[in-house]
Image (cartoon, rainbow, N blue to C red):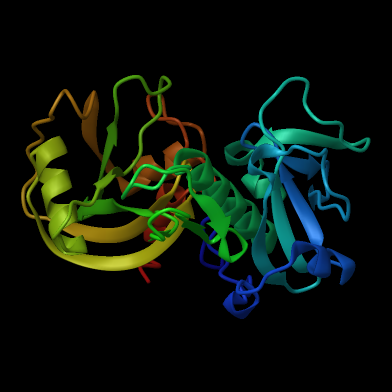
Length: 299
């Protein structure tokens, strides 16, 4: 059985940054570029055929009026993203296509399509929330094919934001530490995770987050893999931490519950047979970390 790779982590799109300077969308469209439309943070999916891309622009007056150059993908070519806003009703799609939440549809796409969709969603979310210059407060303009915003008043350049998050496979022997946050659906547990803080290493963030949330002391920490998670703009940094203690003391502000689960129990969880814990979302890095750990694939 091959290693499980989380969604959005293909790394196969050529972002072709040299095209961003002097970018003219109409030139790329005339050369055969495809368009990925987004509406209300949803992407268009064709049933059984993955992401729906078109050669036609959406309606005039689309949000921010700009096209974002996502890059070149094998078998697809240049791909641009267009935000169609969030107004009802939803823009029409061809028969067999639906507007779908990216979390729900990420496994319906090829790895390259999922990477394109995640990039588009993250960039569109950033543009929506960074319309004004943080230096002087003036409205900023999209630049560099959507990969910058420039202030026309003070000329400050702003770049897309990515928030690093550590997500930890914490083990002690053949047991794995899982937790659930308040408000999660019944039966939903996952590996612990938390945002990194300024001036902090990945290893220090792992140890701090685990200690704060569960009271467990972690010693050795090793990086495993990462996953872009565009909800709205996180980079999940997957690590394996070896626990030095086992008594759990949860912070009720962070966790509703935490527990140790054996390998045998985790097999039951992933099979949907555990009486308390439901399977993790396929495509998420937490699922990949656990499945690869069960198969002794730690790199």
